[in-house]
Length: 197
Image (cartoon, rainbow, N blue to C red):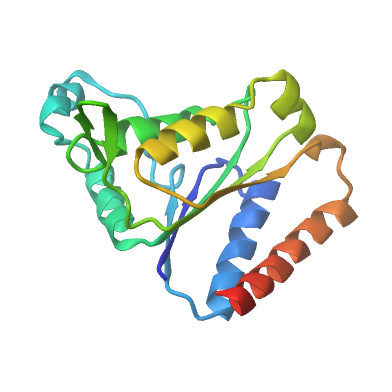
């Protein structure tokens, strides 16, 4: 199992960064092979320009980051997304990652009955988010965009299965103790998986 982490947060003192660090520590301790994409560190541009869009139909790209990310995606069996929920949805840089990296022919084609995903090498996905809103509020009153659109539509259309969403809500009201417990729970969760896999 080779894991690819896709991390999106611009501030290295954020709790997202603490999660990113902890996940890498867990994988290293398990001696599991992994790679990491830090979208902000890479200065990834999530927006199409005219040249990039002109290559869309052929499934090509002029962005060297896109080429690098596609190679890493094809080598991976497991994905871990780590990002904050902003305005009830993914940050723009994550949406742009999907827009620009998941090209025709590489990630999907369109058949008679809809999208045919090509990323079936991705056997497991974990989406790890933080939000100022409580998780129940995102799910019940804000359309649950992470679950209903990002996971159940986009990732599944790309051919990915066995997707789990781990949400840490109410982050701005959370105590240091609660945040510490959450990071420790990631270790425990990893140990349980290691036993069952």
